[in-house]
Length: 194
Image 1 (cartoon, rainbow, N blue to C red):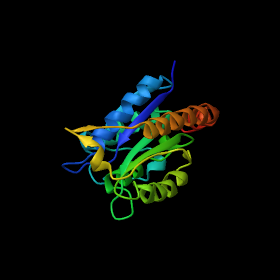
Image 2 (cartoon, rainbow, N blue to C red):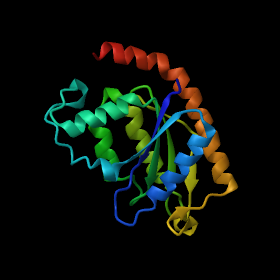
Image 3 (cartoon, one colour):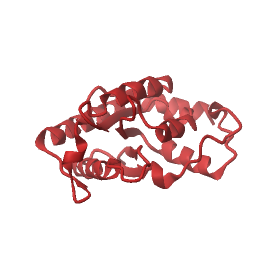
Image 4 (cartoon, rainbow, N blue to C red):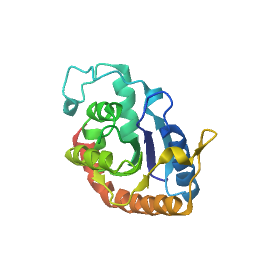
């Protein structure tokens, strides 16, 4: 059975390009066939602003949307966050989605597909890395960085190129390695958290 990779689209605004970028990466990941790949869109998930009364480490979730989100994240063995850069940072919906949970994220690798203007979203990735490491996730150094992303959107589809395809394949290789390495640690967390 293949490990599960969740590709999470972090932009929810109207007119976003995160959806076509995420759909492109989803196709690449499925073609590489290293993971059972799930594409999750935060816009469709519609998580309200954090509304749980208890700290996530307790896993005493009061709302169905949190329990559903918890199950989705717990089932995943690795992640790719598809993130834009807003004012040198990453999106509030992604931070909100991360903050809903705690143990479900632990000992799972995460890669980043970032996009934006001249920086290609790299400052958002650096900020996100601080958050995910606090949750015991392992961000892989390999990344897909897309500068001037709007130039690569044609008729609502993202048009990749050879360097981006190569970067995506390299990141997926590294996620596969880290997922296997961290698997025993995840099993320990799942056993002790129940």
